[in-house]
Image (cartoon, rainbow, N blue to C red; front, side, top):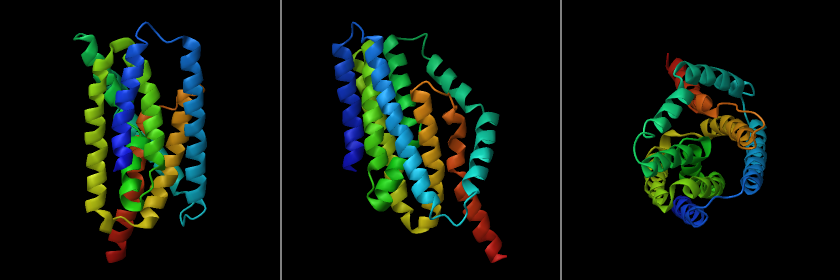
Length: 229
């Protein structure tokens, strides 16, 4: 739970730093920060995926999950919906736009969704600490344009991650290590893909791939159902 508090604190700190640099942060510094965070996400994602893949009893399941999840996300046009959600407030105050952008970027992603689950079940805060670092950099950039008021994003981040943490704690008895392993493989791939996007190498549209995180749950639910028949 401490890591979730640190995520919220990182948002506030990033907003403060960005507000102090309101006149603008030089492009070269933003590029360096994005490259560093992108490399960190890429290495973390590959490490997570490979470490869990070695223990998997279904070595090709993650491929099916990514394919089906990507198709579902594309069908639902998740990337376009996120773009519209960000643009929807563009006609209002600049602060509203900044807060909305911050919430979407800090809450919608593999790290922010998987992190609380792994923290609740295993006490593993790796994802959450990585998310906190990325949130810090993200909010520096956003606050440099919209001001310190974007620190209100921290409330949404804490509520989102805290809610997922609570749900994971309550449902811990129904979540097997095998399921977490398969979800972690998919999650690792998505984190690596996000790293490529942060560095500007390849936009993998990871938003559209997010439903892939649900596919292992569907697989094991069907597997258990068929076993009962």
